[in-house]
Image (cartoon, rainbow, N blue to C red; front, side):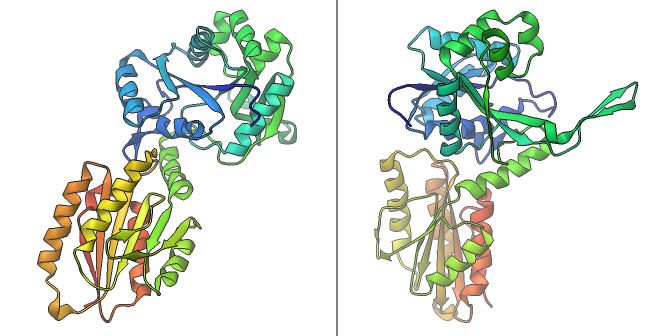
Length: 387
């Protein structure tokens, strides 16, 4: 991104979520211990060219949201009270920016759209800087019809119409002038920011084609789709293993549909600097290194001061264990205590014990499921493979 202009973001999150019918509203529905709007914030917070994010929420939620922002060190975010409608919330965000040092370009996005790539956001911003306003579109999936008294009146040509999506971006002065001239009708019933810019400033918005993951969480079924997409986007696995680890990597890449898998070495309690949010240790024997390795991972992540998108998962896999010499009860007690130590830090610890006659291809599906499901309620469990 060019460094000669500044960029700010408004995320309106004051809606009531009537179509989903949830209480609290959908933007506060939790996934992996965080409200949905956290992931929308994260999309823009990670862009180093974004200066400030203005999050608007209803009065009842301000204190809780400000605490969450502070807990996760989201230092670009300012939380303010929103309005009764989406446009009124956006206008409050514009006014808040005007009272400080306003950005040159302002992005407007929805707090319940969880996925925006750096490339797309950057292109929309550059287009807005050039043309005054810019947005993204997606092809319509269904045919649009008009009805009269419950009877079909007209079917529109789907090739001529597109679905307007987010993010949208504007030269700050353009969107400020548009909202200052908007009527109560615009504020109460309008939905399209680009149209307000065209209507009140004459700026013609430039439209780019967006990707298919720009959809908005609107109905309850969307929560399940969003959860799966969050995992697909953000699961990153670091595997500390033996010479056979490549077999597990192949399985994980296939079933997690991800190539964000890094193979590292671990000798004793010496662990290279961890990255990602999922750590798998392959052990040839049971030793005290388990706790030390887990501790080093957690401490290193804290030192990096990273913002955890998904909860951290640590999986210890013991292969080739001699059943006659293994004290399963003692190991299970130790792992349970280890889990209790880290559960308050949002870290889940799972363990798999494979006896000598168990093969890695039997273990791989279980490791994959634990990584994918990442349920904190199962933390501390010891899973035994083989008879």
